[in-house]
Amino acid sequence: MILKLMNAKKALEIGVFTGYSLLTTALSLPDDGQIIAIDPDREAFEVGLPFIQKAGVEHKITFIHSDATPALDEILKDAKNKDSFDFAFIDADKHNYINYHEQVLKLVKVGGVIAYDNTLWYGTVAIEEEETPERFRFCRKAIIKLNKFLASDSRIEITQISIGDGVTLCRRIS
Image 1 (tube, rainbow, N blue to C red):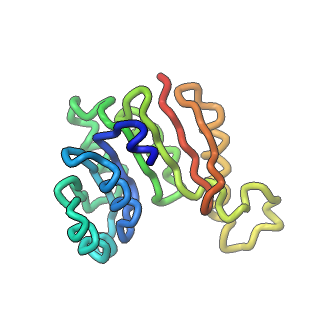
Image 2: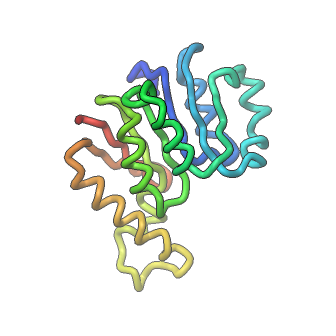
Image 3: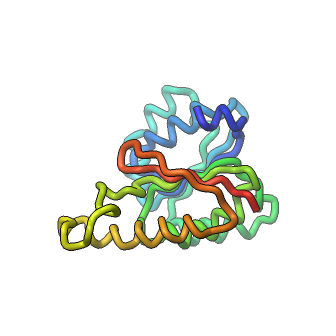
């Protein structure tokens, strides 16, 4: 719905896994919309590919089999990509979210939206580290660092949506 309200036509997805969010994004874009989807796991993407094909939206998707940082560097080399994306969804390796933010800000146009998934990290961002189960501690620190960074980034406006494991929406303002 957000993409339809924005009249988004061009999107970026970092971290595809089996393609559920990719499918919902593709369904929300107009027929001539475009999505660049980046993930190092082609096999996981191919699990969801039959559903993408059945929905008739495969033509909107360009899948890049790669780690995100080098793929984003390549996308940024083409000047026509700068400030051209309406929307970016990031659900990948949490420790690189801040690095992706700097790259994606160059790609998303002013007024565009960047969505970060898992920004509540099982609720552990609101409790002390000693209370956090061991398996969540590693990424917890990266998410807390990201949340503090986004809250102080004057180039964006943010809102936290407490659905699922937390989604932070960032609207680029400069």
